[in-house]
Length: 117
Length: 114
Image 1 (cartoon, each protein chain N blue to C red):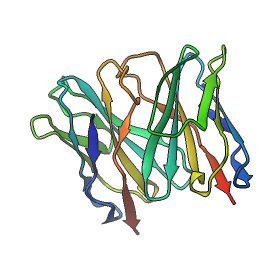
Image 2: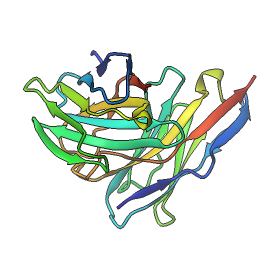
Image 3: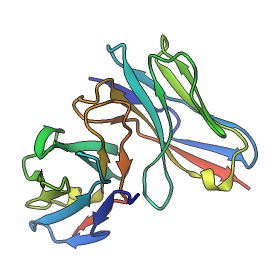
Image 4: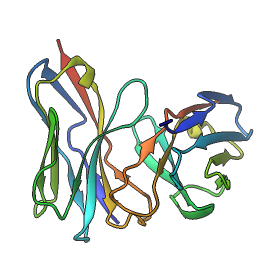
C-alpha cells in the first residue's frame, strides 16, 4: 500500500516570502499521479497543483511550483510571494496511474501554513 | 459548472442513532468518494462508488455504508452512531478510472455525535 508523509505539521512564513512544504511517499509503482490540495477554514479541499510521475518537468501553476524527485520519492510544494489567502492546511496526495486504485487518493496528514502579515 | 454539493452542512445526532449524508457530484463525473476527516487524523478513505457499484471501502466497520443512485449522486449512512464518529465527512467526485482526473471535493458535512 502507498503511504504519504508530510513531516511538517505547521509552517510559518512572512507575507511576500517563499515557503516550501515537504512531502515524501512510498510506492512500488512506476506510474502514478501526485497532487497538492489546500483546505482553507471554509473546509473545501481545493486542488493546487498536480504532477504526472512520467513527466520529468516539474509542474507550475502561477505562484505554486513543485520539486518532484522521483528516485527520492519526494514531492515538495513551493509557494512564492506568499499571500494572506494562502493560509490553509495543505495536503499532499498520491493516486495510482489508472485511478482504479483502492482509495482514489492517499493523503498525507497535512501541513498547516500560517502567513504572517 | 456546479461543484460537488453536500447536504446537510451540519448534523447533530445522539449516540446510537443513524445519520444520512448526501452528495451530488459534478455533472459528468461517475465516481464518488467518501472521506472522514477527524481532528488530528487527516483524511481517511471510507468508500468509493462508480457507475452505481461499490468499488472499494476503507478500514471502517460495516455500520458505515452507502449507495450510489442512477444519477450518480450518493448517500452515506452511518448506523449506531458512536462519539468517535464525530468528524467532517467529505465527498469527492471525478471522471471515470483515470488517475489524471483529479478529485473535486464538496464543502463537507460536519457530523457531531453527542
